[in-house]
Image (cartoon, rainbow, N blue to C red; front, side, top):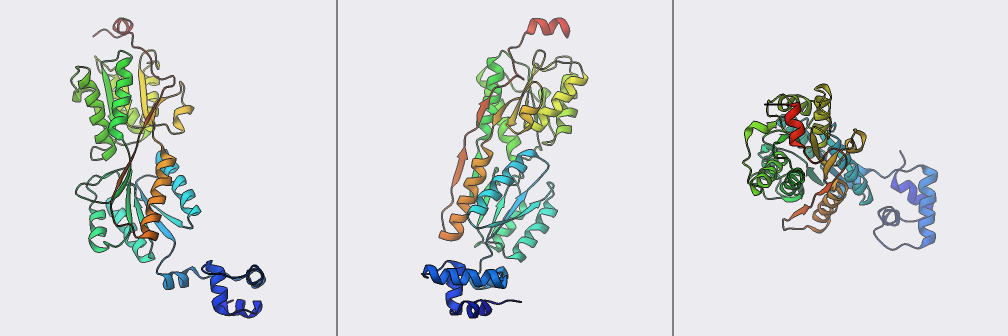
Length: 345
């Protein structure tokens, strides 16, 4: 195996000079750099990342923990994080937990054995015991919460204002005259589910309407959840005239349920989603939704954790991004008279 000593000999320079060139850690003339690079290429030398990590006590690697890679939101988020991490010279180890805390604990053990430089947690759990355990055992390890908050945990956080997004979605439907508005969210202990429901409830209250469990269903942030829970809501005698879906995948499931029940969107049912994922422009009619600035959140998260790693940032902060209503073709003004004729109570 070619060593740094071989490179130094071939380039006719010292080992320390080769190290400075490869690590870009000190001054070297252009001609010297060219000699070193030529020797590296000719000898097909590859710097040992393990050796570098042992010396610097850094691996230039981040751990990214997400609950469900099949969820298109997390796919887009992962892409943004990987792209930004690469620009900062970091690799990313992706860990998909399938919303399983035991599996998450196994991944954490693996990441710590690998000597990663920091961890980005994108967990939906508001009571994630694993995060507390890592904080207790490795208080020096840089960690960031992305997209959620965990009870009684003080970490840097990058969030979207889920309450505001839930409020905007419901407000939009109310402005179109809807009063029977359903909400289908994800897991009941999910931060996003809870905050979006709070926004939904507050918007109803501000319009003199009382939120009721009659129109609320909580399940998972998946298409099949929107389908199953949507069928339940749409089978009610006083079915909702509009449904706020906790994410775009749930909205797709609602579309399927409505199609099977011969309920047209938006003429007989308005639907609004959350995230503005790729789903939103694939379905017909195109989905009105609340846009989450996914790429911006991913990029900011990486910038923040790199700052913590390289500059030893010692204060905690919460960075909150604002959601945006994107109106398309799935919502419209309610015609109660037409609905009463078609669906008499």
